[in-house]
Length: 207
Image 1 (cartoon, rainbow, N blue to C red):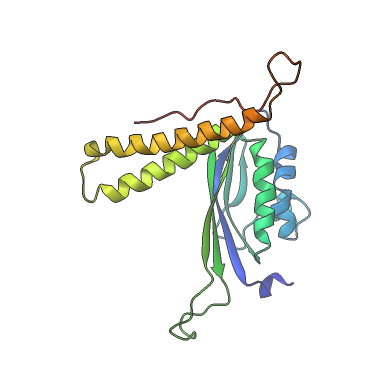
Image 2: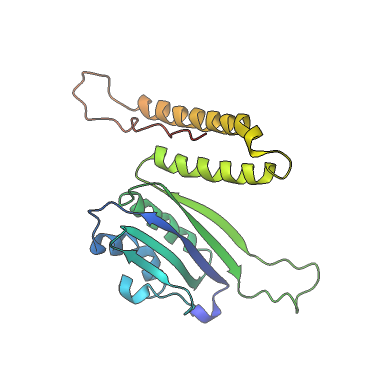
């Protein structure tokens, strides 16, 4: 399918803090689902966005940050490429990070469509991080920001401590449930088995 006939323009946006030891070659491999989807033969070849005014995909070697503001033309199958990329970035991430992905309906013309017609625009958030706690921390921080911004229209920020505490409680319960589910699959202590994956740090609670 020609990219010019693709039903969507898909924009990927976000910054991912990387471990200091991550090399360009490792990053190129992790991002392979994106640049191959764009029809490129390397990250350098595929890092440019479909729009010249967007910086595209950049590796900030000084700050150890992957910066993405990149648009590609594609279809719903791009979601699979995103899933594969996020799984690979988890192994390179130093901290949790959120990625915003917007699907713009390239075939929808508001002026020409019938009044009842709706575009297929879609927006999703994806998260990467070195462990579940880091990912939950980002999810928690974004939720707190959204809820506080909404409620500050009606209440002073100082009154919202209880709301934030309840959000923290929900994420603590989710984290504990995850740890418990992983504990089930661990060998008994002293059995000589390898370390389990149920550890990791609990998300910090910011009040």
